Image (cartoon, rainbow over all chains, first blue to last red; front, side, top):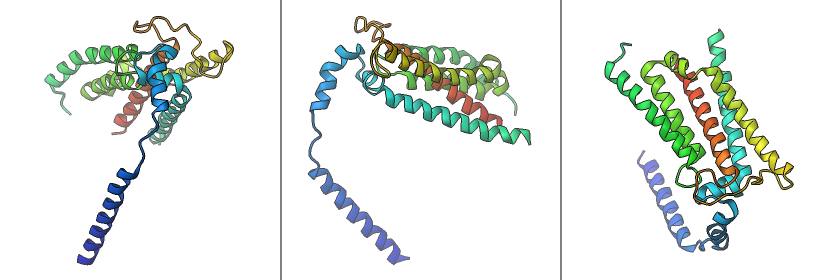
Length: 87
Length: 138
């Protein structure tokens, strides 16, 4: 039991070190795309809210996929719970 | 289960304001924080509050299950038609084919406003439909 606890603690420490050093060595993300959205977003899509202009303007196809996920969830739940009523 | 008078009254007074706040979040989604998904969930939370406080049967008098299903299915096809409208206007799929208008007004930003409305209705119908089914299973 004590050995298992020690092993868990060792794994915890090792992963903690890996993550702490990983933070330092990751280079900063490129700012070109960010600047493009910030400076061109309002002019190109007309929406002041940049989040809206990205998820419905530039990435509208991704939002279409999200609505498909939602409609699949709803139809799955309706299918599963309606069968129980009929029995 | 015996119905509590306080819960019933408070929920009935609170639900209209929650629904109005949800509609505000949806219709100002392109100007301020919010949007279709968030506003839709707020709308659904109003419906769920009604269903929890007054029972699903009385909530379904106001929001019938059949109508919610129709909204859920038709809103998806409306979204697709908005996307195909971009193709018809001579661009790519889901292109912003409506005039952009003046930035900062409520009906501006072309079809982002209408997509927010469609997504808000769809999310609210879907979430409240899920909760109706889960509450009915008890």
